[in-house]
Structure formats: structure tokens, C-alpha cells
Length: 287
Image (cartoon, rainbow, N blue to C red):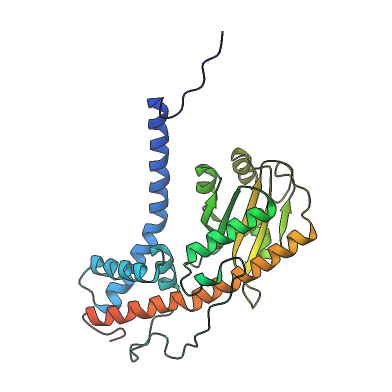
């Protein structure tokens, strides 16, 4: 007698409901992590520009977020960690020197000037996975507020993996080691490598990853501004010298671009936010 094929979530109402509830919990967790930061930024804007209420501050942030194609969480993070503007000046950064956008060999030239942060991070991930020959991986950036690394893009990984590693600290993972040592890190066997804490090891194995390779994204001054990691379903041999050189170049190019984006696009966004606040608020900052 032929065994019945397992039913999919669409065919099993209970399973479908369980998946829906899991997705809802993950969404609530993500919102709960971002909400305090955004609320803090709203309060700062409301006080700084004497706005009528928090909704007015949120409206300003949303307008700037859309204009500069920057996530609200990213905008809030740079807002709360940047020294407030001088109330005697119209510009927030009056002596800022603007630099040209760095070239990116892994993206087409015609996209220059119109590259979004998300598109660049997506291209970094795609190129890394192609070099390592896998379809699982993620990109992280440095968390300005909490320190450590925060996932921004991912593919092929389970939602439980993404939820567990949404933020990682300075130890207990291969990406943390790569960020600390500013060097590529290969984990040939997740099950036995001592770099992981036991909860991290279990979370990676549960996602179907048996090995991984992490590449730091570094600025021109040698500061880690992000990380890209590839995961594979089997034990991994040491990468060839040509692969390591390609990934080194990728990490340097992407790191320089991310540092430029923070010094240019994000500060442009804050400058515009400052201008809007002065126009719509009840007083000038510092008054």
C-alpha cells in the first residue's frame, strides 16, 4: 500500500494556522525591537523643534525616509546617535566635505547615483553566494545603537534562524570573530567548531547549515561596517586563493560604499530633516 504524501500547509488548516501565528509572532518581535528606537527619535524631534505631538515627528521621519530611500529604523538610529545641531546655524553640518560615490565592480556602472542601500547589500550577498557556490546567506551591518551586527538581508535561511541571529554581539559566532579580527573566517564544520556558543550552534544546524564563511565589509580606514556570510549544507573545504581574493575585494568595495553612504546619504537625510523641523516646528533647535 502506497503511503500518503504529506500534506502542505495549504492542504492542512491546522498547519497553515500554525505558520500564520509563527509569522505574526516574528513580525511582532521585529516591531517591538524597532519601536522603542523610533519612539526615542520621535521624542527627540518633538522636543527639539517644538512639534505639536509625536505624530508630527513621525510624519517628518517618514517623509525623509521615503525621499532618501532609507529605512525608518536606520534613520532613527543615525538620528539618536548623532550630536544635535547647533541652534545658531541653519545647516546641521555646515563644514561637511562631500565625497563622490565609490565605484562598485560588482554592480553595473549605470546604477551609479541611483543605488539604494538595500540594492547594494543584495548585490553583495548575491556575489558572495556565487563565489562560495551556495544559495544560503545573509548580510549584516553594524548596529549604531546597540553595537554588534544586525541582519539586513538574507536568502535561503529559515525564519527561526533570522529571528535568532537578528542581532549578534561581539562573541559566540563566526561573523563576530570575523568582525573582531577583520579577516575572513571559514567554519568547515559547524557541529564541532568552538567559535559558536551552543545555542548559536543549534540554531545554525536547525536551519540546515553545516558550514559557513564570513567576510567583513571594511571602510578605507580599516573599520568593520558590515558582514556577509555564506552558509552551505555540507562540510566546507578551505576556499581557493582566487575565491578569497575575490571576496576580499568585494568586502573592501562594499565597506567603502557603506561608509560613504553613512557619511553622505544619511547625513543628507538628517540635514533635510533639520530643515523640515525648523519650518514646521514652533522654535529653532537650541532656543
